[in-house]
Image (tube, rainbow over all chains, first blue to last red; front, top):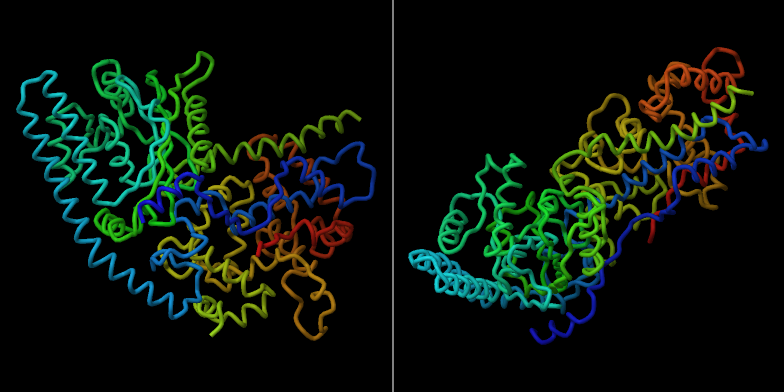
Length: 396
Length: 195
């Protein structure tokens, strides 16, 4: 099974394109002119300023978004072309023959009774080793030996965790791996992204302080090497966050920081807006593209549907997690671009490499409504059409 | 036991919806899927907020008017049949629709019903007429703060005057239809669902 998966990795994963409606990509102006032209027989040397029919454009565009929009579908798991014998991915495959049901039953048996206990045992081992190992290393005096041990403890434990999930990862272009004093930026699909990247490189993590098991792990890790953990209250303070990150990168001996600028988990069919904070710091950015193959197990974490434990159990009862990681060449901010443009440039590079759709929408739309500023742009475009002509009229 | 029946069976009253809206079974299945995706809390119906969450709709200047059209008569919820009933207005006109039995009710996607849908977007108080005031308000939605009150009033006045035939200062549905009689409404107000 592993070898089969490795061979599949060499081609780019085919995304299941599923737009529900036929759309023509025309601009606001073109379409409204088209509508007006079809509506009146008079010659249009002086284009009228407003027509009752203009409403048709907005009406239809609005209805199209109700039927299908680019964003809503990014927050639920990707649909598959052919079923992979996991009942959780069974959306549209209605006809299930007897033979398929038997196969599925067999699959359930294998996954839950054989693979799951194995994986849980491995996960246990991995996490306890991480906690114990980093605490022990923490007692060592600061110096090269401590760094050496810390690096290897981290790497070893992450690799055990990777095995616990049966993650089959193909790394491409490893010569571009992030170096000290840089920021590693990747698209975010699930918390497993961290394990995948950290098992191949030694990073400083950035994140919120959690309670419970996560908290224990975090406290242990920070003893061995400096990670950047923020209190809940500090996260809101953008300047504080930027300051601590800047301090970290400026110290060249410190490890590269791992950041997911989307800020939330997306379902791995697209890349959404990158928050500009990490791009303002001025360090070298090492982009990384992660693409999962959904055929063996869907890695997307739908945090509104599943909690962390449920999610991990689902991961451990899939066939495998197969993914590709591409290390892209480092990028720095050019003199004439601002943080947002730089962020978009990096985002496009990642989207292109991973075969993902590059969207301008904010991942925060998962939870909040869109800002009004975008509506103003549409209004501006339309106003120009009707008022621009009004000025000619008033003169005649 | 056909290949699709198990999924279509999930939709309540699927046959009566099919008759009423004219959508094919496959289209209804896809739309039901979409309905469920929009219904984030799995309530079984959609509220205004569920529709407002669609980013691309919220940036549409007439987004709120379109959302309103799903909630006629002051209701706060729209179930799947209600949802599809509105969407049915945008079904493309096919040949089989044109030679209809005159005794059967007019299909939702007829030219007249499409025009009526657009008319409703203008007619804020649903009294069957678009007054100058309503015209002004809808125009204001479409242009935001980009146009002065005076310019907008001129535009509204001119538009109402041009369409108004019986001189009552408002545009009735008949006058609306007449002023758009040359418009290819069927094509402009149609959305094709892919198979």
